[in-house]
Length: 431
Image (tube, one colour):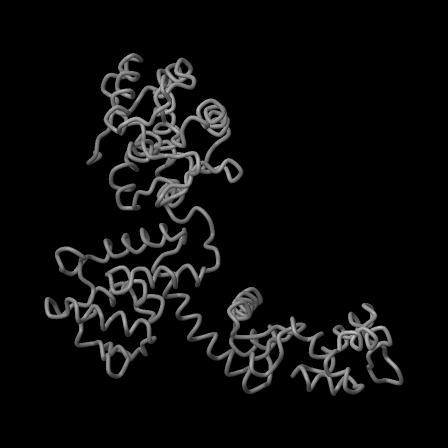
């Protein structure tokens, strides 16, 4: 039995009503609520600047709502009719003037009553839009475009979705998880600061704590001076920013309870199920769909148990390859590739050819040509000279030089690379 009830409109009656109300104020209001799920306040304040026809979306303060073809065509026609008279999308039929929120509700109520939908109100239309979307899309997408948190979706709206759809959307993940967007996650942590969600995500992603460990974590286990967590089975070093957030939280409410994670209002410990829900809610609203606390902890373990040994191996050997990482760390081909690629994207390693180097041990590929041409402007060189210059292997110099020769900047004479006459003339003209 659903805890929340709404009056579901009759789809046939609604379509018939919208056919009659082609481009009227009432028709616009009903479409924005029933087709796109906008709130009354959003309908009232909506301007044409917020309607991005090229991107096919309405840009609201807290979310972006996709425009399907029918609504896009409707709004284009409406803009041609009323766009010059007012910047507001919803205006009166006669004077093309903005309406009050109360009058918007009145127009919607009168139109719905005329169609026999006497129990249905404007808010019900938005809720029906949300329920329909839940039957078609994953709840993460619905949470993002509706502005609702996942807890409200599951408690109030999911019971009205079709049973088959509900089972499909709640059992497991709809899509495989994409690589973790570290920048978005870091931005979320900075935004949340020392809030319960900020600490929850930080302790999972930056300290690798399990959900139960986070729930039971006490201030007596937090050594801010030593910058570490003292758990029963291990000690965990604290990242500087996580240490700062914990320090701020302790100053704010540490005297109220020995537990680190407390509810925002009541300042009491929370159940693990609720902690998981608020974490997912925050991640979804940050655009990190399909990410759970377990994924954050898994990423921490991958960084500490795989990336740290990879960096040590690169320090020892001068460089690493995918095969070497697979052999030494027991990873599969795809695991080694994904981790090395991610480290390269983050700047922990530099990829030159098929080898990965420490940044301080080599030169970024984007600067190879620049440094070689600068060197050759002073003297000719063999491959070994250029390899030492770039901190790469001699065999990796060949493909770089092949491109420079093809471009006409370099020539090979007697086994030595030199600037071409054209390049030397160009350099002279720049002096």
